[in-house]
Each structure stands twice: as C-alpha cells, then as structure tokens.
Length: 187
Image (cartoon, rainbow, N blue to C red):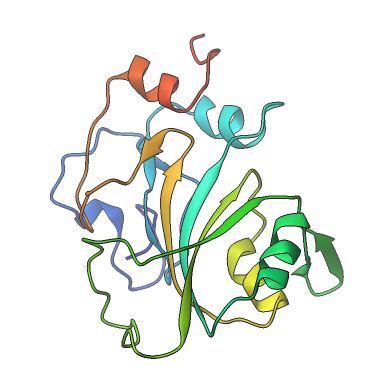
C-alpha cells in the first residue's frame, strides 16, 4: 500500500482501508512502499509545515533490521553522521542522531519478506530529526549494511504501539498536537 489517497498507478491506496476518512485527509511524512509503521493522517494543512519545516526539529524513530552484525564503530559512525547521496550529484552528511542495537520486539508481526531470524542480522533503533529522501536506508547502506525491514515506530510522542497494519486510531486535536509538541496550530 502506498501512503496516499490518489495515484495514477495501479496500487493499493489509503482510501481502501476500512475507515471513513474526512474530506481533505492527507498523509504527513509519507512512507515508501517498502517501509511500514506509523503514518499520520490529518485534515489540518498546517501540520506538515509545523512538524517538518518549523524552527523546532521533531523526532522520528525507526526500527530497522539490517543484514549482518553491526559493530560499535559502525554505530558511532551512524550517530555522528554519514555521507549519503540525496540526488545524483548532491552528497549530504546526515545530522547527528541516536542509534542503538535492540532486540526484535516481542509481538512484532512477521512480514512476508522478512528473512528467517537465523540469518545474520541486527535490529537498530534510529531516531532522526530530519528525513531526506530514503535517509535511513541510505544511512545503513553508507556503513555497508542492507536494510531488510524498516518500521517507523514514532513521530515525537505519537507511538505506533500495538496498532496493526491498516488499523486507524483517531486522536482528539489537542492531544494530537500535544503529542507532536506543536503549540501554534490554531489560526
């Protein structure tokens, strides 16, 4: 499923979920078609600007399964920033971020494309305050690991928790903006 409501391609869309979305609903911080996890949907057009283009950086956290074993040296490189290509001719050094090795969370649903647990791999928890095009995938590739699974688990204090794929949870507006740490959302 792609994280949009309209497409010129023959793909599954958000409107196909079993939920009656209000008119004008759009996705904030979209996920590519190989990624999964938390997706924020809103009718408030100011949210994108306030969350991703405002003066205050906002955190996004990803659970990432990478091929092979990640060393302490590699963790440090990811933490301080690595060069990634954001276009064919533009290289960018990622801003410092938080990265830690974690165990596969209990209760994480199996993904049909996920390799068996006995294949050498490492689970990472990566928290960024920026999001260049496919940044997490490019970061782990820059340190010679292949991203095998990418799950966004939070945006600020909004958590994926135990929501299952395709499940929708509504939040009251004040709680929504408090969890996102956005104060100036009202006109």
